[in-house]
Amino acid sequence: MKVFSYLGKTVDAFSKAAALIGALLIVPLIGSLTYEVVSRYILNTPTAWAYEMSYMFMGSIFLLGMAYALKVRQHVNVDLFYAIMPPRGKATMDMIGLAILLVALVWIVDALFLYALEAYEYQETSGASGWNPVIWPFRTVWVVGFGILTAQTAVELVRSIAILIKGDKEPGVWHD
Image 1: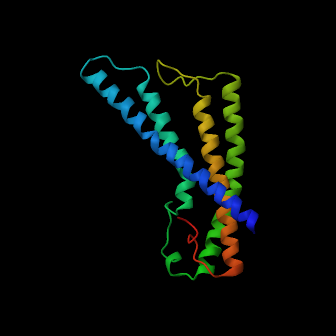
Image 2: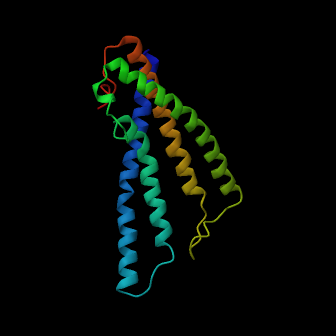
Image 3: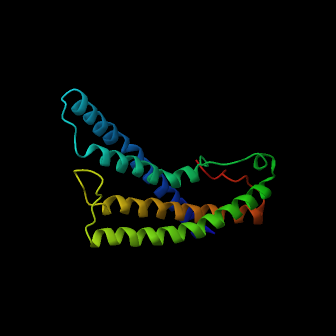
């Protein structure tokens, strides 16, 4: 159990670090959008890169924050019945949902890895603007974001199973 505790804390730390990196990306997002607005509406010289930078930054912010949102239970949740359930009932609901999610995430990460690798091998470009950057760095962020979410989902699944076995904690009590 000590090994799992260590692995769980390690995954929690990765989730938190990824979310922090995602949060820090808000600064260049705001900077690039501000530059575009000034350039376009004051200087009358729109940029060729701002549109793609903005969706890449915004996408990265969400992708890198997904696992942390799961960790701190800030994801979308319908808790009409969940809120009144005892700890084992909540853990059972969590276990079912997390198990289904984990299977889907393993498949998604595998597909995204191949998608990013293919973009790197062919030096695929976006084709969405005059800037037309290579797209593999952004697709790599997809793999990293979903990879960390997969690991966090596995940790939360094991934590739910531990609650089912022990029955002494509410789901989420181990989070900071």
